[in-house]
Image (cartoon, rainbow, N blue to C red; front, side):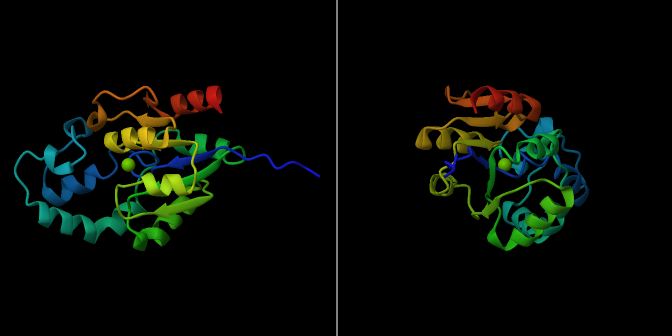
Length: 193
Ligand SMILES: [Mg+2]
């Protein structure tokens, strides 16, 4: 009889974590004739970076209409594919995203096209990831959204790797680990899992 060894399970956000945090900006810039850079995005809200007021409802409608196309051509974050590929047999890769459920096919197609490994993808349609992360009993979470990272770390009492961006710079508690790239995330994981 062989004892079954449970692999550590990782909960991983998609947008701004597996995808490059700046990947949507060229599309927003061309649709709105602006020139926003990632450094301008100091809050988790693209509208905060606009040089002029934009109607939030109109922007939301534009975004929702273009989401499938935007996600189909999203660029992968630097080194994400390399690290996730190296992790795939040692860890369980559970992607938990705020994207809506109707985007599941597009999301899976993107992972397949980019050859990024996954064991499970869950699109919860809201930013409240606590329930999904609890249900799947993830051992560590990977995020780019500051309040999500803090909430997940506090409610689940697990380490959360926060990928640094201009929009997530407020202070973090001890079990939220700020990293600057996937290589640094890999180094932390190797030390702890
Ligand atoms: Mg994200």
